[in-house]
Image (cartoon, rainbow, N blue to C red; front, side, top):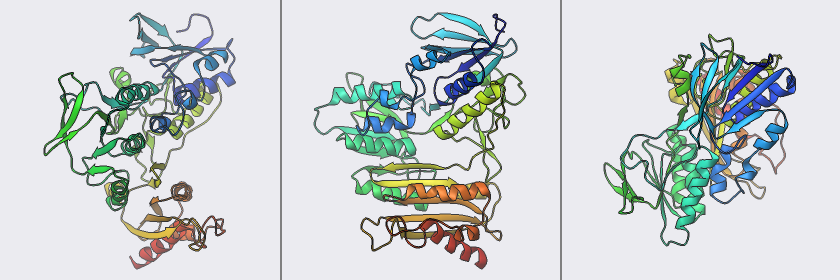
Length: 463
């Protein structure tokens, strides 16, 4: 417990959820009422991890441009922020955490009245031979991004530079683009049938074709068995059961898992994805004094009614605002999410929201699908770009279950129409009737999302 007579809030994690919670709590409670101590094991706070691929690719400056609020700014606002300090043990029975200074190894216990766990997610890093060799990089933090750039800098000027990306999810395809922009010959090794497993395979196939067209070699069904190194110990190739792929640098893009080691060891409740379970106020279930948010928690899927892991900065910032309000004496809730995400590889835009076909089957929903091809603007207007829209609707009721879009400029953000419809529980027939904006430079007379909805209505009626 705090020894000053004031309440003490301890925050584990200095990025989106943690510092949003600390900042919101500070707005509501002054330093004389609430001490706030935040621990962050890295060098940076409140940064956009989503911007790292674009920093690596040279499209944006970094790391300073990716930082929303510096450590100094947090301290000026009355938050005792301690960098290069990691929490190594959580003792909820005695309301304290044990910390270790990364550089010196010094350890100490710190008591709390209220605790926020915002430990984020960790990159999936299987225990393969050579996985820790120099030249093999995960990309999760700004420190990771800088380490990768340091490696690329050492390779600058070498001819025929080769990069292998392991995994073809969001990070995988974004890092493939970044390395392509830096002049590398890029190979993506993917365990699945198609890249972007967050899409249905028929939509992922469109991404695969586009990547091939950009000169990115994408190998499906590739199970990596080991990382091969040269005489100097640095990476030289990635091996699968069938082949070896030469590499001067390797980027791991196999997804992330909730970083809940501390929570698990402390006996806090975890869900089927390994994330912390919270109530609507982001309070950890069964604990009156502990909250959690960001990539380390599971959230309610508003479409399926199940818990799922959605590691996105949008949710992390909202979680932090909710936590800070409740810790600071106010009131707020996070009702859940529909799983909206967008990405791109060069000029190809990729978007999805709601359930995939296999998600619907997994929760026992019967459904119909509709897929259409359209353009981003009126077909006669200059710059009209193609897109493919897939819509999934519940059989009989016509309730929208999911939407996926792959296309060129102007495609991805159209998924927001479907995200709002999913949140509102709308049917595809109601989407057809929406009064959306129209002018030839912005859309055809029928927006592509509504064209897909019209086809879905027909499928519902036929079923």
